[in-house]
Length: 303
Ligand code: NDP
Image 1 (cartoon, rainbow, N blue to C red):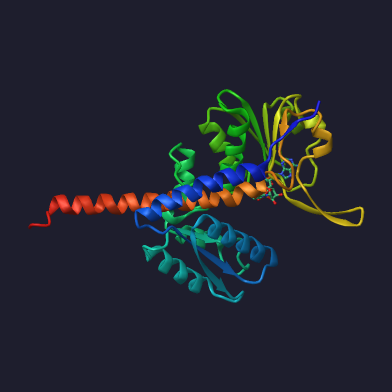
Image 2: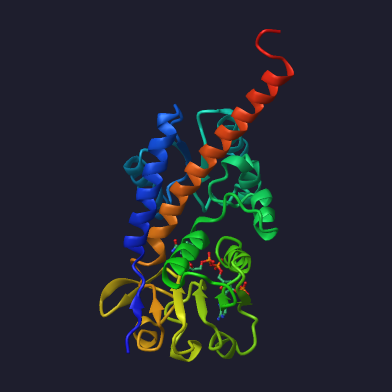
């Protein structure tokens, strides 16, 4: 038996097509969704990520506004940029590419973003909303995993899901989204006892550890659905390769379905970022319309 391959490229193309249709609707109403991307420093990987995000935005009709700042930019100067973007009604989403240079407090910068424009879903207000089950802008990678799970399994109610990893950007929001979907959720981390045994009971396994091929066949129940978030660069057979946290070849004959690396979760992250930008634009438009209506009823234009 061989697991079904969960095709993240095809799923992300579907999400992007939906986003493009939403963008067209917004434009017909006179709203041009715009995403501001703030990049500080020279980290080569960050430059590649930003280039891909800008390209994807262009493809679906979202305007991207790039703010590239030198590595020695002060925290105060970054905050000034964020404050200006918060105040600009033509900007609907703000993304600060991480990591920031070490002299800048990342949390300070992320908390300065207007939560309504926080398309990464990292602001405490959005994190709190997620944990209370009233999420609007949710972190893109876990949201992408949920889309893949729903496409594969349909209803997730009652499934036992094990999330391996408890980071703020993947593991914790992933667990909150699974809980909101009525899964029974177990979160494993580096201090968990007998993690293989717990993982081996799960209907769904989400691996977000950052350790190449750590999750072997002994972690997976036959027939489980496996989502591999890990992206690890390794040297193998004289080649530079990208591998996940799951030992793909070992798990393939056991699982019912599995995401490959690359081509699984990776493409979903950018697609969900575009979806969040459209959600933010729509929400800001509704808030502006509601305010205008309230002002009109308080003081009709004839008064
Ligand atoms: P972090 O390093 O922030 O978190 C890793 C988590 O794994 C921690 O909670 C850690 O536990 C846990 N862990 C480490 N070792 C073990 C172990 N032996 N057993 C169980 N748990 C363990 O990583 P991220 O969450 O940021 O990323 C995880 C992976 O996902 C990385 O490979 C990253 O590149 C990838 N990634 C992929 C994205 C995509 O778009 N596809 C987006 C974001 C990340 P503890 O808390 O106890 O230290």
